[in-house]
Length: 292
Ligand SMILES: [Fe+2]
Image: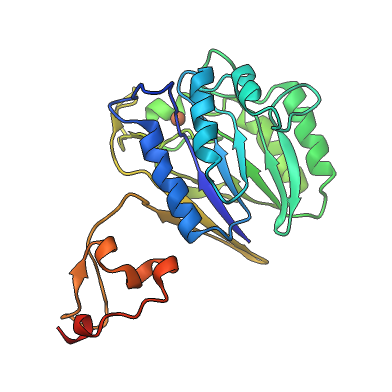
């Protein structure tokens, strides 16, 4: 099963920019690239901070961009989101009995569980008693089934102090039902705007750069400096006994080359269409390219 992980799109009401970048212009190439390379994916999951200020116009713009995907998409909420404005723009989004944007769905790989960690007015996240009760019930109903978890906030310290201060505030409350279930295969989260992987109490996790702006890698500042480092999405391949994630910097246009001979042509992606473009793979490498 193939899954695409995207996160932290931070849309604002057009034509505004955010940190000197246009979030629409940063996400649209990801949509085009996913359609071109990964139309066979089962779904695209966006793990929160869909918008920066929760503006209705920002959600409308996000919907317009994501509706261009040829792959079904799923959206969860981050600290920058507004639950009511989100649900107004995406009325078909599942919610639990209490109105939180969290749900579970069964896939060929196992049960995907999507959590709502938004606490309005705070940058950190938490799971309240109601949301935890829902999680316990959901995991109990999936006994014996592999589970993959999606949430916005990091449930652990990552070494970036400014982000550690606004992680999930009650990680132990999340951990207990996960350990009771015993078959949580992976945790995907957003929020941190960097590519990071590791494990938490033996459970593997990963997170990714946002599509708009990034958090600068630093281990000493207490605040959160940003950067325009490149965005990325994750291509997740889930097998019966494995999970692999490739981090794809979809805006990268650095030179490509054939690894076989030192004399092979060096060129930008659009100049070497036969090299790695699945829709151009029928093209034969030009004879002169091999001969030069
Ligand atoms: Fe974010």
